[in-house]
Length: 112
Length: 110
View 1 (cartoon, each protein chain N blue to C red):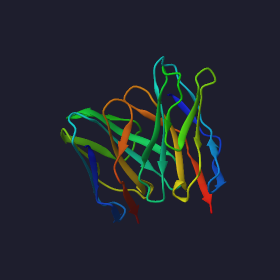
View 2: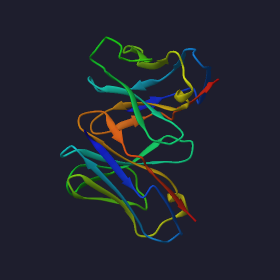
View 3: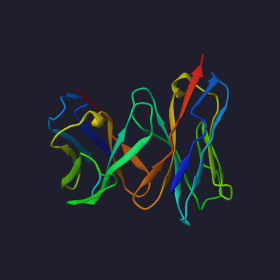
View 4: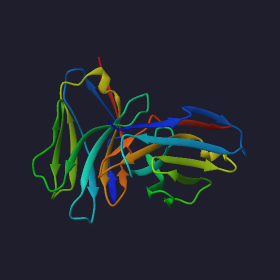
């Protein structure tokens, strides 16, 4: 993706509740990949979930799922049953040729 | 399985001193390799990427350089550090599309 925008700098959610993080992107490529990465306080970047643009089915990984709206160029992340360990920065990213373009991130705090 | 190592984990250097950060990948061959910098509370800025030995592409003009002397080794260097070089440096590798990151190096330039 050429540009990736995350419009929510910070969010919070109660433990065990569901939260959705927003991401929009723009690209001129016909086939591309989108990702969500998690960066906890340790600052290790961890791949959470990936979506291939040609697949209509939304990706799911355990409590994490995406809502991929290709026409709207929207790629949101839903976290169900939020846990304290989900507290982290979350980055949306799009893959172009050789490179990833990252959004500026959303800081998520899970409140006990 | 693939693993990626970075060292040192933390580094404090005076302005004007040289820099060498090393990144190595295990368990894969001919990976694409990347260096990113992350300022505090900010997103990731791509500095360099490499698609093969000796092949380096620079994304932004800066005080830093990169080299890839071996297939699975990627080095970030500077001859003279600036205060603005402080930050968190991440190395990553990719096979197809997604990238996998090392643990990072926290660099403080005083």
